[in-house]
Image 1: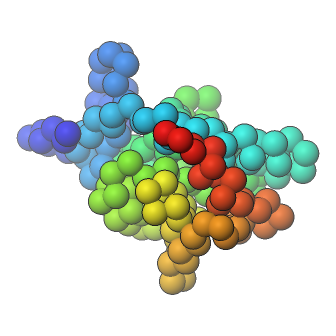
Image 2: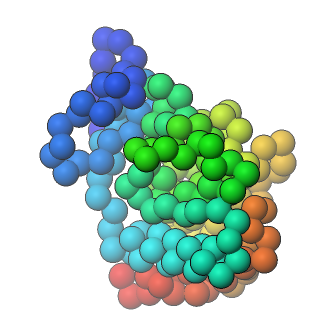
Length: 182
């Protein structure tokens, strides 16, 4: 559900939204309430986060976050991606309250195909996110988006690695198996 303000909303407006348990995002200055994800969505996001965080514990190279954590790309573009990776080289975007700037790698588990696979993808690419994954549980696939490259679609039973962590291989059967039966 979007609210249509008479003016573009900003991050200052966003942080004043009531703390009522709802999750919000700003897309092009419009507020969107993001419904709570279902169990399968959470299991997939949790699996990815655990794999990335475990890899970083062992090898270093950056830090990972799981939603909800704000990514402020611009004053009127604020998202809460499911999994976020900030490489050591990009660490200057991390603040105690949010990520202000461009994360290295962003993952969204698709709950709204139009918003996640088109609208957010376009914003992330416009701001220069190095890699964006749209993880689609229904299609058992991951769309990998990188600036100035053709989209790559990896389907189960394939494997995929983020460019920033090339030795971290995600097995899609295992990933989607995390939510089996839901």
